[in-house]
Image (tube, rainbow, N blue to C red; front, side, top):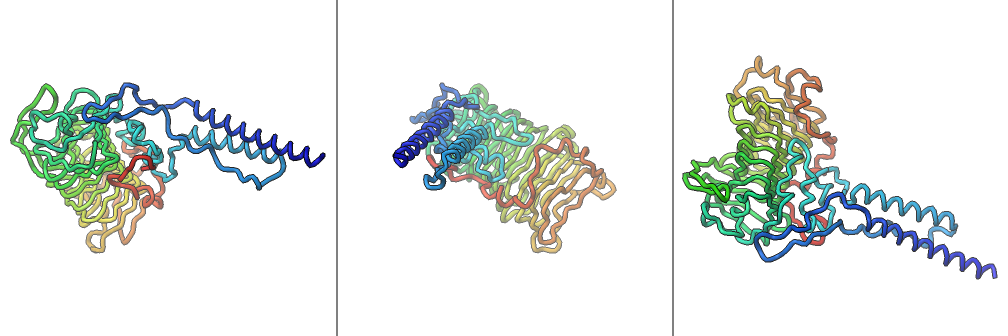
Length: 450
């Protein structure tokens, strides 16, 4: 009889465990979602609709229990309680964190249903451009036509037609495509270009201009072989088009704009800069990009005499400056620049340069100097004597300097001098390889983590 009684007790314990796990799963399913996408989001162009989902994919109900591990009922109950608490904590911590250490990627890349929750990306920005929301509060627009035949009267379904609209839009793509722009792509405010899920190139023509607008996110594009265009009429909104003079041929030109986030793009081989920000632009984050095969990579600040750029604040974080680069990563004027946790594996002349008294806060970067003994210095003061630049606030804090690389610091040296050039907490330079390993346009596929 005792053995029968023990068997019955064991069955009751197993049933209790099942009920507890079911209750835990139910609690997880009824938890409030912190960010909801609009229920009336619809596709503006294209046939497909993007369905909303009220929550992320379930994580699978917690850790599996080995039924042979213990026999003591109290120990089993304790294990069940621990499983429930661990499961709940994972949900409270937003289980999308992959633990890579890259806070942007850990915010969204582990969600297998990322393509249903695209707008959550807008909550993942860091740095000075962290408040850029892009087209988060608008509808989806599906680009299904790679053509760019008319810069004044763009065809519905094209990228140009999408970016000039007056209302907020989250712009996605129907398939892989190469878009060769006849003239500059002039963006309007509150737009996100989100190329995740497809291989989208803007190449062999004009590229992107963000001029006197606000709240723009550009994510997941391959931008390369941009050329000079102009001396033509170009539409910038549904109600306005005008004459454009000759453009420089930048990959992305930011001109008098604010709240801009450039993330996870691959950029190379343009006529002028890969990314330039000038004429009072500010509140910018340039993150997770992969830069290759270019001379003058990035210019921040219009000219030494343009004093309005003194208010510029730019974060450059988690980027990989790769093969074939020469200089300007970035080249700064005036303003405040936080260069944090980037991987510099190639330069021919120098990595970071500046003039006109910019404040440069270099933290937790990895600088691998070239073999050329005359190009080991990370920094360059452009056309300025030491008597002038020795008071500029440039510092290296926790950087990893390899193969003879050296950073020439200057200025007061106190932490307070860098308050306006600090935008996030730097991680150790020892993890830069890990947190920049996914830099550039990602190859995301539906149904799997990106």
